[in-house]
Image (cartoon, rainbow, N blue to C red; front, top):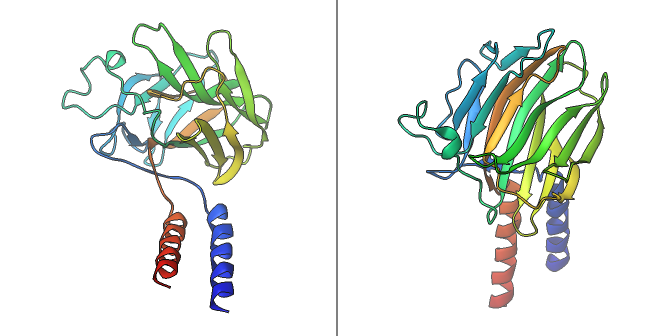
Amino acid sequence: MKKELLVLVVGVLMVMGNAWGVPSIGFVAPGPGLDVPLNDNLVPVNYGRWSVNTGAWTYDGDSATIASPTVNVNSALRFSPTPLWEDSETMPMEAAATQMPAGTDWGFELTYKHTGGYNGGIPWFLRDTAPNNSYDYRMVSLWQVGTSSWTIKVGDATGDGWVNAVTGLDLSDGAFHKFTTHYKAANQRLDIYVDDVLMAENVQLVHGHYTPNFIQIEDADAAGTDSYGYVKIGQIVPEPMTLVLMSLGGLLLRRRRSA
């Protein structure tokens, strides 16, 4: 009876674990990592640096907002998971950007909303860029493809092009939405979540590069307003349910050995 009960409990916990499997992003000093609340300035929390700041961004204590002008001026904020330096605003960022490691799980997350008109565009993307622009591998991005239709695309390098990963997203409610990408080093694939719901699993990048060194956010198009709450990238921390399952597994193994 005890054995059957234990099997039932573990089974239930595994189901719950799958439901609660949204990755949690943590940081290990000195990085690499990026944690920037876009509330009233561009000061990272312990990790990361900004390298590009163009356009008329405003900070309202909640987010960074850019109202697209009649003619797009390519307003952008660019951040890197590069460890902080004392002279972070003067060091040549493009030549010193740190990549996330391909041999370790990492996660990328931001919150975003769009209000007002639509004219098509790409509000944010994750990239791996060489200092001399000898390569520029785009990895994950959000595309505005219709009045209330959005698509998450992956890939893009010279000759490769973008591939649809998640289609038919409706972001017309004017609320912030959370976008999370989990890179899994074991099989070099990506899991993509929107508002903590798994939308695409084991996504492969055509160009095979999984070492981003920049996150870029910008005005999506020449219409409407784009807002960003925060930007993060860092190692993946096991969610509490995974730790519970691991502990239960160890307990059952010890009981079996002692029996």
